Length: 87
Image (cartoon, rainbow, N blue to C red; front, side):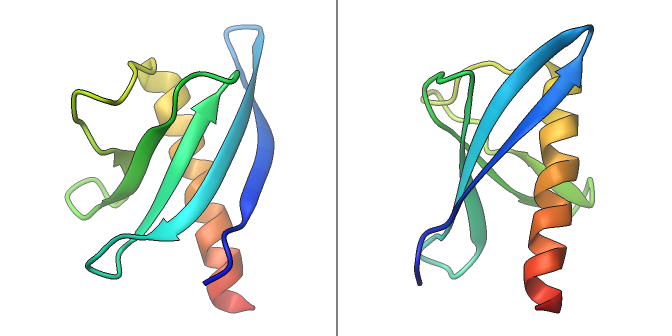
């Protein structure tokens, strides 16, 4: 699988956040995204069935991202993954 990095902006609270998201499959063939916000350390997003959206895979290595930013990124990742499935 060729790694693809999507670049997009999120607007929240009058601030613009630069986001880079690189898709990959984990060892169980589940889609994940390595996400960096404003060149921050990378955090991992994965699908959460309970929330029916992508969420941060919480672990000690992931930086804290405010909830509204996480939700905006999650929405964009869902859109990206749907577009790729349709292609």
